[in-house]
Image (cartoon, rainbow, N blue to C red; front, side, top):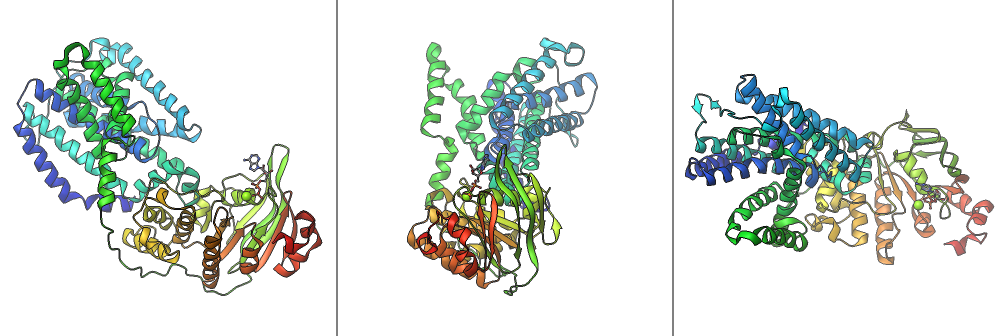
Amino acid sequence: MNGLSTSIWRGLPQAGLAAIIAIGLAMLAPDQGYYLNILMQASTYAIAVVGLVVVLGYCGQISIAQAAFFGIGAYGVAIGTVDYGLNFFVAMLIAVGVSGVFGLILGLGSLRLGGHYLAMVSISFQQILTLVLTNWIEFTHGPDGIRNIPRPRFFGLSLQGGNAFLALCLVAMVLVALFAWRLKATKLGRAMQAVRDNDLAAATSGIDVFGTKVIAFGISAVLGAIGGGLFAGGFGYISPDQFSFAESIVLLTMALLGGVQSPFGALIGTMLLIILPETLRFLKQVYLAVYGAAVILIMVFLPDGLWGFIDDRIRRNARAITLPAPKLPLLSQTGQMGTEKVLEVADLAKHFGGLKAVDGVSFAVRRGSVHALIGPNGSGKSTFINVVTGLYVATAGKISFAGQDITTLSPHQRNRRGLARTFQNIRVFRGMTVLENVMIGAERDGNDVANAPAEVLTRALAALDFVDMRADAHRMVGELSYGHQRYVEIARALAGSPDLLLLDEPAAGLNMTEKVELGNLLKRLKGHGLTILIVDHDMNLVEQVADHITVLNFGRRIADGAPGDVLRHPDVIAAYLGEPRHEVA
Ligand code: ADP
Ligand code: MG
């Protein structure tokens, strides 16, 4: 959070400038009437839509309740000022707080529910709020709504006038948009995007996936309520139908239309959906059809929204930014193979119903060694790695890492202690650049640079240099070849300076040249003394780098020892289809 606050404050000069421009623009608007109302509506809606950018665009969580949070903000201000005589800003603060708490509670639902189920829960929340607003008449004034909501004074300055209040709304909109824009490039913002792109890889890269989702929901609800509170002051009258399910859909459409990845998309989408219907009114009867068709066409042809389209063009034309040369050492190991056991598993088991995928396996990985875990397809190697990294809960047994029992820790906690991995099926954050992917790894809490933004960048670049991918730093990782995505994954793991690197079939899917390059990379890592547990089918690769080999078959350990002995072991030869070892290779 430290990193978040420092980099957000660095945007203060831009924020000040943008706020002054916003005030200037507000002064040009008419002081009352139709156009003022449109601008007021657009600016307050936009704030709520930026909230959707955070929860949906950044964090990938579908929330169909943004109108509910908007409503909590509006009703908080209305009830607070009209019924309790509170100052506008005090009422707003309370409303925003209440909304934030409800947002966090909704986010808590993501522990057990994913994707569509969570979206359903958000719809229920939305419906419940509508019922409460309509039926709890003593508190909410019921279907009649609340009238005569006052506008505030601000440090002696009256905001009663239309222009003045619009200025407040526009300044708030600008600040909220800048906040979201800066957020995207913070540790928290990157964590959200990692969760969106690949939650398993996020967890094993040290990100608290659940906590990140909860915070995203909280921020989104807070922004929704800020928009709603200003809306109440802007129009002076609110009623339950303004915060219904249909309005949540409108807000969602605005976000998707403009481009949900960026607050600028939110602003564009909101302006468009508010201004478009107004400008099409001259079409009389057919205007709704034209409006609907326009929205559908944009969505079909620009799936990333309008801003997504513009952003893509900007990025393509951007020249590569020169990046500083790394100074920090990437790998701090001594290069000495020791007797210390970095990882020790005892009687580890993982059963899927009746299937014993891992069945009472014990062995230790010594510091500085390259330890290979081999075995036929389906022998439990990936399951073993998944249990050790915490993606699966062990059925039985104990896992010690650096002398401490980690058996019950979550994946991100294990990563924070220095356990990094890659996946058999590559798991990268496809919506982020190569550099951002690797920065996620460098930001692992507990590593020496985790909370120093400049050093995180340097460490990430050092990791990219190690796999020779610096030239691709600003490319989207989804554009890369399979082999290069694999390197990004390895660099992401290295960037956290792990004590143990687990590689699950790193050669899978690579062509011959790439396999040779990978072999060289592994030898270089070995030369630096990094402790590695490698799973692979390719005996050639294993023989080149392994100091020690453990063999699994049907979930059981059938051999463990020095490569020469293990590969001549009769059980091992039998396990590999009963054929002599040289044919296996
Ligand atoms: P390997 O990586 O050695 O090829 P795996 O660890 O992927 O083998 O699989 C070991 C066994 O466990 C296989 O029989 C596989 O079908 C089974 N298995 C793996 N993951 C699951 C799961 N999530 N649910 C049920 N069975 C699984
Ligand atoms: Mg596997």
